[in-house]
Length: 214
DNA sequence: AATATCACCAACCGCACGATA
DNA sequence: ATATCGTGCGGTTGGTGATAT
Image (cartoon, rainbow, N blue to C red; front, side, top):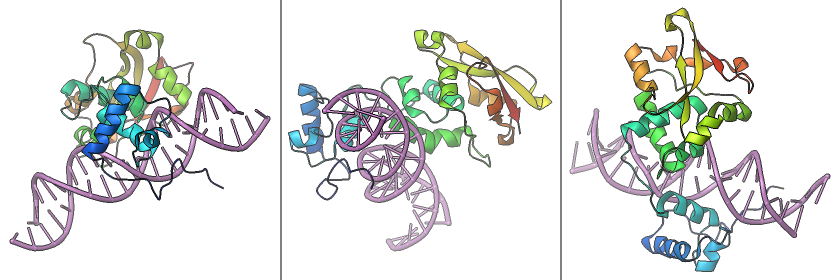
């Protein structure tokens, strides 16, 4: 037996939100908060919506200080850098971009940035397939948390030698390296994109991560 | 002008996880 | 210890407008 659905799908309304629904939800949350229970919220305010749908609508659209569209070059670079570093962990990436939602960034990546970054390339970008513990170790050194910065991986050796070591380092102030530009400037084809050597990545040895050109 | 294809994005779905009874 | 529930997340879908043929 599967898990019980969170709402009655026969009676719940789906599809685009009307301005009236938006106003009802926004007004209630601004006055009373979510009440800590999204499932109960729609019943309480008379919306024929699933609680999850209300939560999504609030977080992605109605919440104050949400920015839509108009991504800057800096934001592009940060998204690309973080994606190449931690993969599709959109909530973590969104946390580095004030006013942006994970859904927005995910859509932006899937529809535009991926194409921009890998324009004309034959294969999709490499997936970074290593454990959660490794992700955490890679992206959350103490300095990173303290400074709300992020880490980066930079090539140490000549890329023509078939193997390049990327050294973990924190990136401060204006020292962010534009990975997409770097790849384009160096004329590296997609086939040269680094594949993560997962065997080289452990929580205890993240200072030097090896990548291999394929 | 009509049709097909593409691009974008809001919203849905199912799963995993943590809290709690 | 375990079952249940609510929440958060990432993947995917479907509607709509823009563009190409």
